[in-house]
Length: 234
Image 1 (tube, one colour):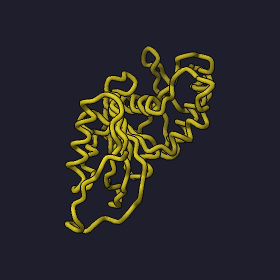
Image 2: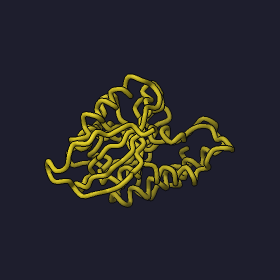
Image 3: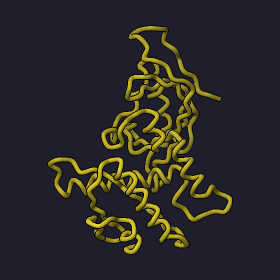
Image 4: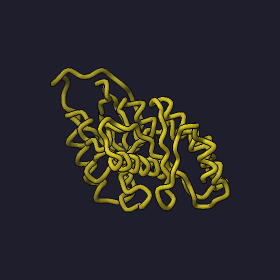
């Protein structure tokens, strides 16, 4: 593991073991460069773990904020790492390889294309796939803990809340529904949402929401249109 980290970091970067199987890498980088360096770290470590059954890698990459203490930085990095682990679990990754399952390249493509979110029992965002952040325009750091029900159109919100409450009570997949949700730019998306209660799954500990986009439209004028009653999708 140490050799894999040394190969991936640059002169001037610092890699250190903080305990058990956790390591910290400190580097100077812009946000875009940070993403590339994170990918390089992941590739190097995953290559070193080939053949190690039941062992995977999760990385929490963050940018340090002005005035943060070392303890606060480590806490946010730890939260980001568990979010990365949860994303893998949502997509069925991080397990022993199965010859009948998609390979690493296909798994990466699935993660890039799948709009998936993990929320807690109060509908607060735990993590999401990169596609979800890209489609809806929210920043991973600032959106952590966001109440996703508040993104639902006001005419659909009570229905969405009732459907979510039912999912919280019943482990496993629920009935998909169609609702309107807003993105960071104020545009509305008609989406089909399939919820899967994985609160008792130790790898996820959340409710996984898989969104399938139906259409995108401009922000409706306040009070325009008649209130609609979304129905479960058969």
